[in-house]
Amino acid sequence: MNWYVKVLKQYVDFNGRARRQEFWMFTLINFLISLAINILSLAIAPELAILGTLYSLAVLLPSLAVGARRLHDIGKSGWLLLLILIPLIGVILLIVWWATDSEHGPNDWGPNPKGIGNVNEIDSLGKE
Image (tube, rainbow, N blue to C red; front, top):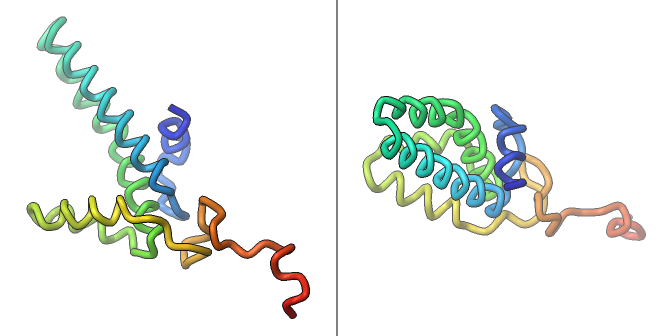
């Protein structure tokens, strides 16, 4: 749940990197909340189906932001999210990239969020 809240706090932050765990935990919790809202709205009152739509609109920007940050983590541009517009092939390609491990060390979008491959001050001592 902490990963979900972290993404919501970074509402429209398309800068930086997001590790796999952050992306997939947000996706899982988002799916479960959407499923619960839709099941409850259908079970209690079908006219409450608008709640699912409102929730989806509320999390649209955070979903795009975490998707772009996830692509940044593997060294790709966030603009590649537009591949989702290509039926089937675009979705499959994005899922493969989202499941790919982080690029070790810092890249154009910042240091590795896992800390792997980042240069610390202590590591650079004596190498000058």
